Amino acid sequence: MNLGRRFEACDNNQKNRVGEHYFRWLDKETCTIGKNVMHGLLRRIRMMETEMRETEERKNVVVNTLQSLEAQNLEMERIIEENKELDYAVSDNRRLRLLLEDNMMRHRQRECRMSMGACVLFMVIVMMMIMVSNMSGKCVGVRAVKTILELM
Image: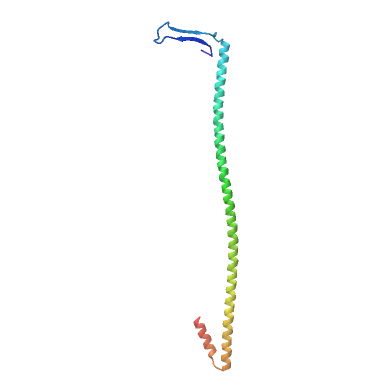
């Protein structure tokens, strides 16, 4: 195992001939305690790399969630603005409906007054015809009333 040990090497052996390859360690071999420490450090490094990857994945999940929430927030703000516009339209619609109902009520009252006036006028005309016919002694008033009623 080479845990960072330095060495010398010369590779003049291009055709794999035995004895033409030079290799020598410059550093002494690591002791058993050093090897155990090195293995422990390597395990810790791998654990830290795993934790770092997991942390990065969690960060990506949080970033995606944040982006999703921001998009939902923008959508909610748009809906709130649209709701305000609709509330204004509804209140304006109520105002116009009340105005229309008021105008319809006035129109009905006007029609009632005109109908009453027409009835009173009709009764006055009939009474005058009856009075005129009684004064002249002829029964023209009754025939005129019958004719008028038939026309209706």
